[in-house]
Length: 116
Length: 116
DNA sequence: AGGAAACATATCTTGTTGGTTATATGCCTG
DNA sequence: CAGGCATATAACCAACAAGATATGTTTCCT
Image (cartoon, rainbow over all chains, first blue to last red; front, side, top):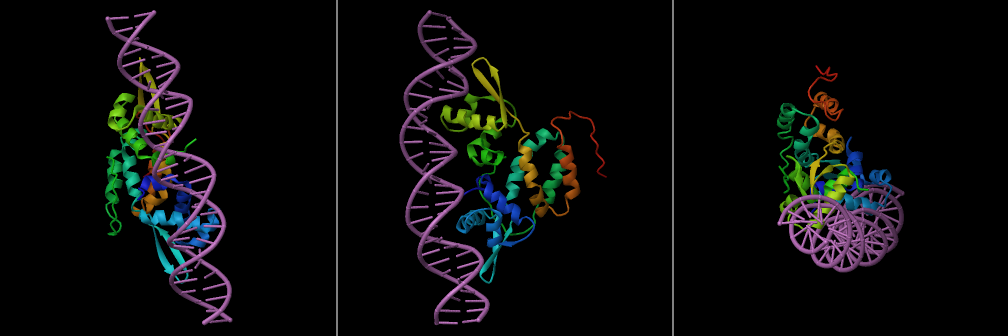
């Protein structure tokens, strides 16, 4: 199963997240947004779902998808040491952010790959 | 040419950056670090170089590679809206970070920092 | 100058993946 | 209950990317 970084490697997948970033949307709207067949979108949604980055809610025949930001923290964490490179002595602030990020939802969902 | 996100999609490439994250290293050491043929590593280095994420310095027959963190800011920027999702009402801080990131290497002084 | 070390580039092979076109499933409506 | 939406899944294909091996190219050493 794909890991967060690989999932985001695909532009369409980032695009989907962007479309979902301000609230849930049905698949149909996503299909409009990306210019691409519906099955293709569903496939991307599957990948995102399996990576825990979106979740869906059923509304009659439609599925409303929304972002699950949790896994993105892995990216944020990986980024930390490099962020320090372009913003020197930001460690305190960073630590602060880190603490704020302590836990938004219990939901769980870990994946391997924790580099640093 | 590959974009930052795609470049980072590949685990070996992240690994390389991690190995370089605390200073420059010759290719040979990277080859040790990843367990992989030297040409494979050189290929990854090429991709990273073309994406502006590393640069090299010549030392006799060796090439010393080091990180160029700049392009990573694109990731950081993309992350911003989602970061807000797990760290509610952090916008002020974020804006602050954003401004700090405005320039390559400030060295020490102050920049227009009117946050607070 | 000859040879080895360190790295880059070329070429080839193979697996994965992102897309497409069917087709199945579930739910609502008339 | 038949038909039409909305979405998921299946099967297939073309493109690509990540390895490996083989071969340059440059620089150092003796």
